[in-house]
Image 1 (cartoon, helix red, strand yellow):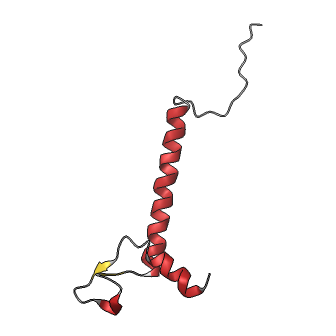
Image 2 (cartoon, one colour):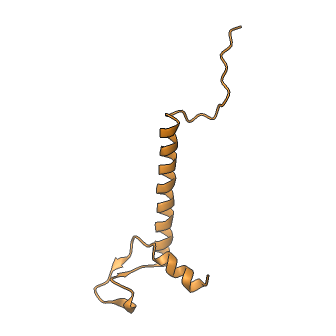
Image 3 (tube, helix red, strand yellow):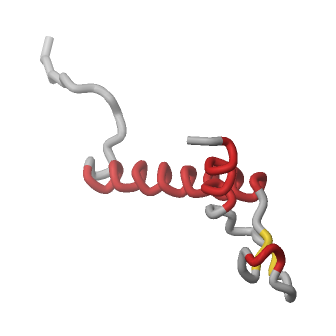
Length: 75
């Protein structure tokens, strides 16, 4: 994948693109940047990670400890 194709793909992820009243470079009504795309991808990963973590807590019924072997012994 070329550099131009990669930057275009990242720009398409930009959630913070500024609306432009003129049709700038015939690319649509918003002007997206690579920095905005990177920040948007980072935010999406954070949201996805949070949802996975909350799903794990939901499935494990709130028990987030990693102990797998619990024995109760009377001495």
